[in-house]
Length: 190
Image 1: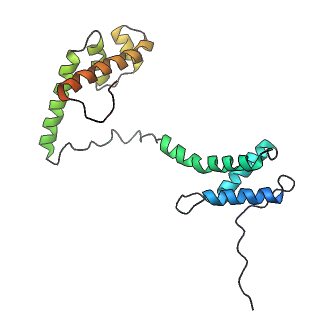
Image 2: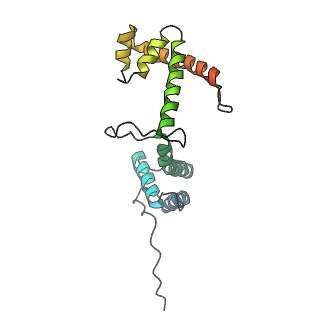
Image 3: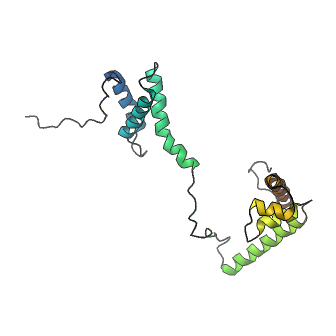
């Protein structure tokens, strides 16, 4: 006596009249191929997303097999691409992120290192050409001014603050790298 239950259906039934049965099986197979264990992607979810794409198209495209592979792949890789590209906003009420200590020493050593670093940066800022010292000091201000406020303070247009900032920070980077030396293997400084 055979008491084994039939395996549960893992694919959504084909919508009547939208796809032939062979196309529905191809879609199910492609979705199952991309829904590997440990990826966090389920075959049924991929199938459903591709079904929605088919409904938006109004029917199967002429090259259904190629289109199906591309659609399933896009749906499977979409969350991974978004996860790598998108970053959540920091909680606005949490305040600034915690600072990592420079060394395994106590708080006094960290404060000395921070003060020395700030002195070095401020000394380098004073040697910058043109309006750069004023601009960088405004950018370093505790009040965190907007571009509009910086432009008004320096007497320049708001649209020129960004390019000027870029040039000034490039000069500052060059000055600091010449004093300390740039790390090897990190690429070119701009």
